[in-house]
Each structure stands twice: as C-alpha cells, then as structure tokens.
Amino acid sequence: MGLRADILKGGSILTVGQLIAQLLMFVRNIILARMLTPEDMGIAATFAITISLLEMSSNLGVEMLLVQAPDGDDPQLQAVSHLFQVCRGLLMGAIILALAPIIARMFDTPQAVWAFQYVAIVPVLQGFMHLDWKRVQRNLTFIPSVIVEIAPQAIITLAAWPLVILFGDYSAILWMVIIQALIILLASHFVAKRNYQVSWNRVSASRLFAFGWPLLINGLLMFGVLQGDRLIVGTAYTMAELGVFSVAFALVIMIAMTLAKLASALLLPLFSQADPETLRRYFRLSVQILALIGGVVALPLILFGGSLIVILYGEQYTSATEFIAWMGVLLAVRTFRLVPTIAAMAKGDTKNSMIANMFRTIGVLLAVVAAWLALPIASIIICGVVGELLAFMAAVWRLLRLHGMPVYDSIIAPILVSSILLIAGIVNF
Image 1 (cartoon, helix red, strand yellow):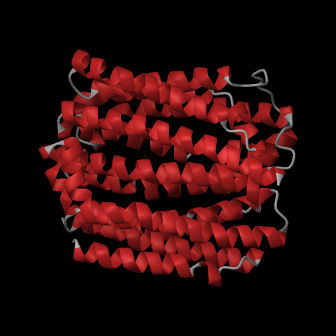
Image 2 (image 1 turned 45 degrees about the horizontal axis):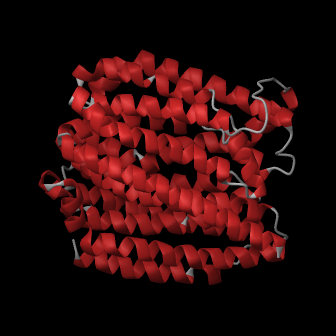
C-alpha cells in the first residue's frame, strides 16, 4: 500500500508539473510563431538540431544509472557522474564553436555563423548541472524535478515577447535558449540536497562507461529518430519549409516528450524494484495503458491537426495541413515503444533501445531517398512511421528472448490502435 501511495503521489506531482511546463512551452511557441516569419523559425530550428546532435551523440545516461542502480545513492558514483557531465559539456561546446561556419554553410545560412558560435554556450552550462534532482527520482520524489522543469519555462515564456520586440528575428530564440540553460543550471543546484562534488574513481568510471556505451551509440541513433526528419528538411528544402515543419513538429514533440518523461520517471523506479512476476504484470498493464493514451492523443491530430495549426499559429503555416496527420500517427507509434524501452532499462539492458533504434534508422534512410526524389514532406514522415513500427517490433522481441517478458499478449493493444490510426491517416492524406 505504501508503494502505491508513493506512486500516486509522485505521479500526480509529476503530471501536474509536466502539464504546466508543456503549457508554458506551448504558449511560447505560439508567441514566437505569430511574431516571427517561417524563415526565422527555420533558422532557429537549426540551433535545436545542432544542440541535439551533440547531446545525443555524447550521452552516457549517467543520470539513468543513478535511478536504476541499487547503489545509485552512493555519493562517489554521483560525483564521478558529475565529472562525466562536465567533460561532456566542455567537449560539446568546443566542437560547436569550431564547426560553427561549417554548420551554417550546411544549412545555407551563412548570416548565422555568429549565432552558432553562441550556441556553444548551452552545452557548457548544461555540463555543470547538479544531478541530485535526477537521483531522488529513485525514491519517487519529483518535486525537485518539477521545479527544474517549470522555473526555466516560466521565465523564458515571460521573456519571449520582450526579446522578440528587442531583436526582431531568430536571434531572440537564440538568447532564450541560452537563458533557459542558465536557469536550469541554477535551479538544479538550488533544489539539490547534497553539495556539488566532482571526483574521479576508476571503478565507478568503468561502470558508468559500461552502462553508457550502448546509450552513446543509441544517442546517435536517437538523433536520427528525433531530429533526422528536421535535418533532412533543413538541408533538402527551404528554411521557410523547415520553419513550418518545425512548428508542427514542436506541437507533436511536446506531447511525445511529456509522455516519455512521465512514463520514464514513474515506470523506471517501479520496474527496477519489482520482482520478476510483478514486473511482468506491471509491464502488461503499462503497455495497454500507453497504447490507449497514444491513440487518444494522436487521433485529434490526425483528424483536426491541420485546422489546429492554422488556428494556433496563423495562416502562414497553412502548408502544415499537408503532413500533420502523419505526425499524429508517428506520435502514437512512438508511444508504443516507451514501455519496452523502460522495462529493458530496468533490467540493465541498455542495448535494447540501441538495437531498436538501429531498425528505426531504416525509416531515416528511406526519408533521405524521399527527399532526394523531391517527394512531399509527408512522405518523409510516413517513412518515419515505418521505422518506428520496425523499432517497436525489435524492442519487444528482444524483451521476449532475453527477459521472458509477456510480449505476445501485450502487443495486441498497440497493433489494434496503430491499425485504426493508420487507416485514419490514409483517409486524411
């Protein structure tokens, strides 16, 4: 009864916090989309693509180990995790600074070289973040997480309108990104219960690397999964088209990331502490619930997403109606993968997500071909749906083979929901 009460309390706090944070982000995106041109939004999207590439390609998942490991409360393990984060942030910042001219040329935005150089500040700030707000999630304590999530979102949302008035172009978003990173850094130290420590220990470092190297490879694959479509659109289409795509993408990814954060924060500690039989029961129920949630949130996007985009962001984003329905399908199918991925992580199997994302990259490769053939942007998203279905199948198969999870009777709901959504997507294409 105590565990259930903790789950209910923690889940309620986390859900409210995520809803507030995502609502603030949603309001901010509306302000930016209505005050800036699609071209400016497109250039700003290249900042996110650049940061995402470096973050995902250097992610060892040290904060996940602090939650998943039985000795995740060990101060020494946390101090070494901080050292890994600092080194990662400094390296990422140096790489972005050095490659700024090349990145600007790749996106055909030579006027933004200076902006990419300033983007290098973001990973450096992130590198000095305190990980205590992540560690306490192992005890289903989420108030620090809510503070770290909401405070930056609230401040930069309030600053959005004045910054756009002051700068008048994409540089307003650049400064918002930097300010957000600084506030997250400060908030993480503010909520920490322990002093910030950085140290080196060969045993802990080896353990972190052994846990994280599959996540390192998976990070590159995840970049292709989460940002590959935008990268393809940004290099093969115009900045205006990238801006329209990114506005629609932001709406969908906001929902996807909210579901992912809630599921991970609640299910990872729950799965990690469950005995095998209880874990199977939790797994079966969680798959069914997430499949239902994925279908419920995706169906309105499929049926009414085009009208919603125009109402929220303005007539200049009307072309999003050509592909937003397929983004809804992609959102649902990606939601199906959350539970298998978290269950594998709870078992210490960080290779599951890596292998699944290898299959997901098939969709990215198909999307490259679609862009090379100059097909409509909708075709790129359809390729992503194909890749996500393949990744989901790979994830559940590995769980069955290695961990004996009840996969077959747990995929009925996702298959049923995806079939309904695919039919709706085809009808609205």
